[in-house]
Image 1: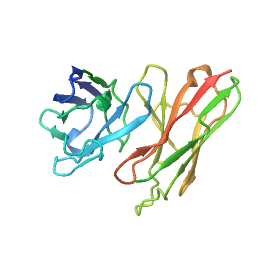
Image 2: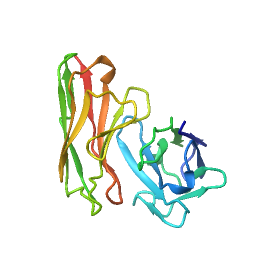
Image 3: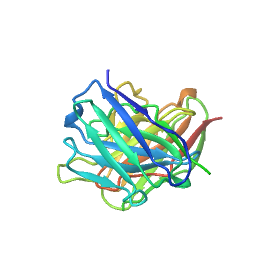
Length: 115
Length: 112
């Protein structure tokens, strides 16, 4: 069964750092582009970042460029999102997603940035 | 960036009746490989989003056949042939043609 399980969220102050993880199982992780998508409370879905199968190609939304870093460890079937210089507006549930071919979304992990 | 516009913003439907949601993109979502990278998701209350339809018209595993997707280029439609109570939630279209990937603003479906 294909599964994506996010973890690492929490409550922190503006300017802080956090690393999110996404454990993947049930498919050949290293063969797939993976993405992070976030959803602020009561708001819509926003794409954050993507990474190719071997980790050599990464792209970011303008809103997180220079602050967030996506990476992966294919030996551990795990996707990461290092989040630095966090802002209040980064408060959201963060989901890791595989769009192609499509798989079910995980439950996400909540990041709350508040003073 | 490709802008995705969904209409209507909300929909109130009697069980058993059909429903339709439109999604328009600011540029064609047809890729040179012949595929059109337009997808539909449903986010039920309190749950993460779930795939409904991928590449315009392909139902995700386990999605009932009352859901169908159609369209081409820049105009797309999600149809529910007979709405059921479990279909309530927010429906999103999105494209994966290029970065940044973008989502429509969502259509909230409720049951009358």
